Amino acid sequence: MILLLACTAPDKNLPTITPDHSDLTAQVEATLRLPGRAAADVTAVRVGDRAAPILAAEGEVLTVLLQGAAATGEAAVVVTAGGAEEDVGIFMRYEGEPAPGFERMWVVGASLGEGVQSGMPSLRGALHSPPLLLARAAGADLPQPLLREGTFRQMEVADIGPAPGCEIPDIGDFLTVSAAERLAQLGGPEGLELWRARLDPDIRAQNLSAAGTRVEEFLDGSGEFGEQLIAHLVSAPRGQPTDPMPSQAEALAALPPGEAPTIVINFDILGNDLIDIAMNDPLDTAHMTPAADLAAAMDGFAASLAALGVPVYVANAPSPLGLPTPRRIAAEMQAEGWTAEEIAAIQAEAEARVVEANALLAAAFAPWPQLHVVDVYGEVRRLTAEGLAVGAGADQRVLTTRLGGGLLSLDGLHFSDTGYARLAGLFVAAINEGEGLALPEPDLAAALATDPWSPDRLADLAGCVY
Image (tube, rainbow, N blue to C red):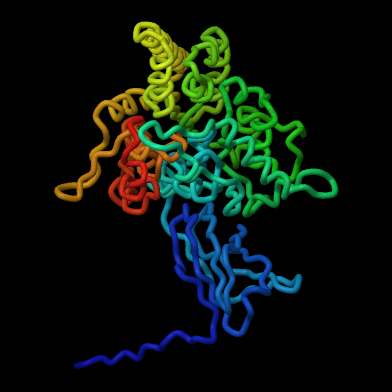
């Protein structure tokens, strides 16, 4: 017997959303087709209980960003036009369950947690950041404080000096100028309207990472204007950079039980306390936070995280001496008359300070079995010496920490897409071991294939030696 089944073709006059299903992490683009309606007339889109920020509108088609969901199920698509909301009768289906322990993943820290690349926070960086890669591996929801495309200008190849030195612009100066350009556009009758730089200023972000944060600032929230500006963009965009706001530690501690973390991740807590050795000419360890100050802050850091009563995974600090700028500065110092022995002594002292800071972190965590250190120091040391082989056979590339070498973005400080994928992979491996899970590590070859900072796409920097 032959059974004939009649299939009904989709009605082209009905709204559609593509894709129409996603895991809980989402944070991907979707195409919303609204037959008979001008997409430009739509001022807002909501999918379930979260905004789906509009990225583009053309004809009857909207491109929106899906921001994920806290639980599986169908999420209705609602559009706003002419001040009125309308349920358009279609759904996004959120599927899957988060890995055990990832029911509420929270992230704290600084620029690596934001996914900063080429000098400044960006939408693209956040969507390729190590926290989001880790969330994808765990199938976890991770609402992020996403910035609008082009909020800050990022470094370009044209900003880099000529080969072979390829001098990188001073990151502090670049940040100041880029931020000032944007702030001039965000002024309003009552001060800065930072919320206009955010895709969704009202989402409750679970990634609190803010560029420039040091250990002490994680605890008490203090900081200069630039750090306060970034922190407000992340956690309080409706306010002013000078308004009081809780520190990251205080924000975590204040969460009610139903919102409190089930796991906490940090990719870079020590970075800003140590990195200034690499950004100043000549090299000078006086720019690094003194060990005594770090020791006091580290005890508070560990105690605040231990009080949460959940697993916590924190990166130790890689040595900044392997970055392009300090290598170039060392060469310039020698050309200016510094002896090799004098330079080596400064480098040795700086390396010892990094090792000491990492030892302080390990010692502060030692009393609490739920606090774990992820050895980023050791991995970056290996990558600096050996590079990272990605791919196989004739397609294999060996990436390096040289400018244009594939592991770093153009600022020579923050990672490329592939570098961030490797960083996320370190955390996946540590969490799998510590929590007895089997999360998949990010696919490095897939990351490299679309990485704008791959050696193939930065061929103009092939002559750089640092």
